[in-house]
Length: 67
Image (cartoon, rainbow, N blue to C red; front, side, top):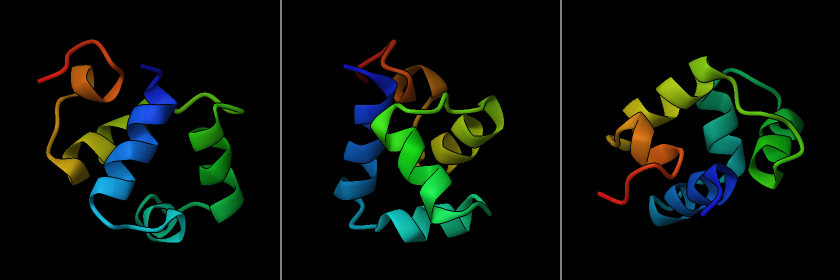
């Protein structure tokens, strides 16, 4: 599973919109959308913030662990 699919799945599982998460990350919606589509590489600082937000490990977020 790609990191981008996992990021999208986590967002959808938490009933959040792309706009909600873009605001949480303090970025424009279009930038966040590019991360979810895999058009831009997700920066480490954003991955850390998302892992904290969803209460998952970075390994889970990037697909290295399924727990």
